[in-house]
Amino acid sequence: MDIDSLRAYCLEKPGTAADFPFGDDVLALRVGKKIFALVALDGTSPRVNLKCDPFLAMELRERYRSFTPGYHMNKAHWNTVALGGDVPDRELNAMIDHSYEIVLKGLTCRERDAIAARTVE
Image 1 (cartoon, rainbow, N blue to C red):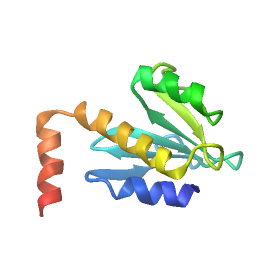
Image 2: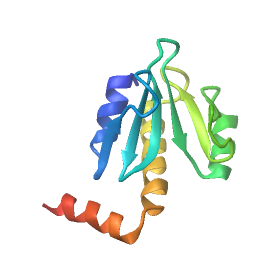
Image 3: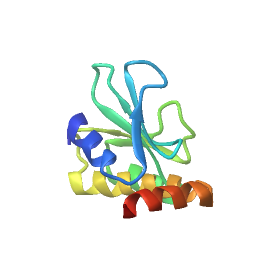
Image 4: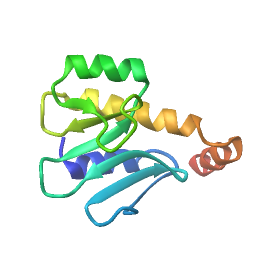
């Protein structure tokens, strides 16, 4: 998966927006106001940080070389995934979905209801 495909997939999710709060080389994808994916655009190997259940994070790191502890993030709750590595697109999409769902669940009821209302329209 390339960066453009990843960005497009993330932006299909309800209540999602993209911005650059850390400069031009890091794309933040948010649900509500909370980040669920950080994409490195610095010209090195493309990679994304995704939030993850700690037990699943460990399992994925054992299964795929492209999964490593989250770069500049809480290592227990975030994975960095090298794009174009040994992770199939379907697995990466599942991890994006997982990250989105974790962050969505952490929003207030009011925020989740607002996102759901926009989805229905």
